[in-house]
Each structure stands twice: as C-alpha cells, then as structure tokens.
Length: 151
Ligand SMILES: CC(C)(COP(=O)(O)OP(=O)(O)OC[C@H]1O[C@@H](n2cnc3c(N)ncnc32)[C@H](O)[C@@H]1OP(=O)(O)O)[C@@H](O)C(=O)NCCC(=O)NCCS
Image 1 (cartoon, rainbow, N blue to C red):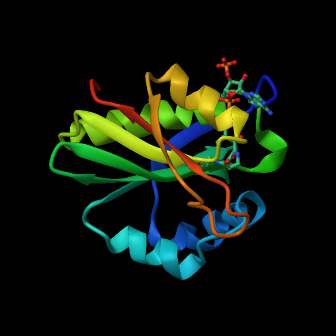
Image 2: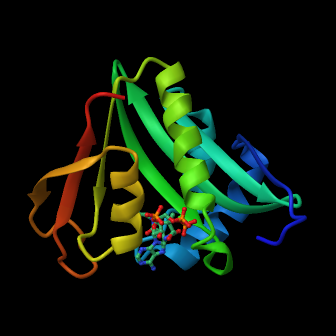
Image 3: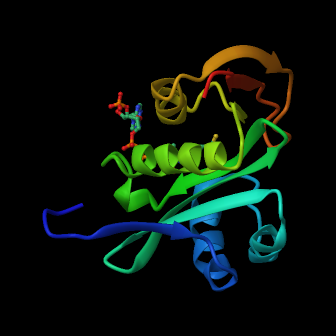
C-alpha cells in the first residue's frame, strides 16, 4: 500500500456502482453489473462497504442481514492491491456493520479453489460446514458453505 497511502472505509453509495462493477468484472467469472450494485444501494437488507486508497475505490464488501443472520454477497479487492491486508480490514468492518444490525451469525459460499478467500474467512472464525454440489455454473465447481454462528 505504501507507507504514506491513506486507506479509508465508508458505506457504498449509488455513485460508486461503476467503480465497484469494474473491480467485480476483474474478480469474478459471473460478475454482477453496475445495475445490480445500484439495486443493492436501495436494498434495505443490504450493507455494503467500500475501501478507498488515497480517494480511489479499490475494494468493496457486502452482506444481507435478515433477522440475526448475515449472508455475505461479495468481497473483492482491486487485483494490484491484493495481499496487503485490505481484504482483512474490509471483512472486519463488514462483520462490525452486520453485528450493529443485529447479526449473530454469518454465512457465505466460496469456491474450494479460492485459497486466499478461505484463509481470510477462517481468520474471522468461519468454518466449512458442507458443500453445494456444482454450485458455480461457469465451471461446475462445488461451493463450500462456511458459517460463524458466534459473531
Ligand atoms: C479474497 C480477497 C478479497 C482477499 O483480499 P486481500 O486484500 O488480498 O486479503 P489480505 O491481504 O487481507 O489477505 C487475507 C489472507 O489471505 C491470505 N492470502 C492472500 N493472498 C493469498 C493467495 N494468493 N493464496 C493464499 N493465501 C493468500 C493472506 O496471507 C491472508 O492470510 P493471513 O492473515 O493468514 O496472512 C482478494 O484476494 C480478492 O479480491 N479475490 C478475488 C475476489 C474473490 O475471490 N472474492 C471472494 C469470493 S468468495
């Protein structure tokens, strides 16, 4: 990140949809569009956070909260800034935000091949509890289902 770079976090706004969708596009085989992110800014169940490095949007994460359960929708960091702790800061903030909305448990699906993401989630107490067979339609890969029920 560089020693003098400023990393800041804030809630995602409608105007962020283009920048978020651009990172999404570089990160996922089946990316959401900017319209999807627009919709998320109006979704009352949704909580999305963006991370900015010297004012440039470089990361985002979002979840839906329903009763006491949070479901992570997405997390991604601009490729050139991965592996520097941004994902960890962002996921920590997302957990704080869903707890503030009453979540006591968090769940998500992840590809078994996604070692970096699995490591990140495990560091926040999520554990793999099962699989959804052939969940990812682009390559037929299973999804690992992870939970932390004691947020
Ligand atoms: C997953 C992702 C958000 C992590 O963000 P990041 O800023 O790179 O994460 P961090 O630098 O905070 O690292 C998190 C952990 O992953 C580990 N890690 C990072 N890159 C890794 C890699 N390529 N392989 C294995 N582990 C890796 C780190 O060592 C760290 O673990 P540690 O705390 O034990 O050291 C980022 O890699 C990304 O955007 N990936 C593409 C989108 C994606 O797959 N999202 C998740 C979908 S479920």
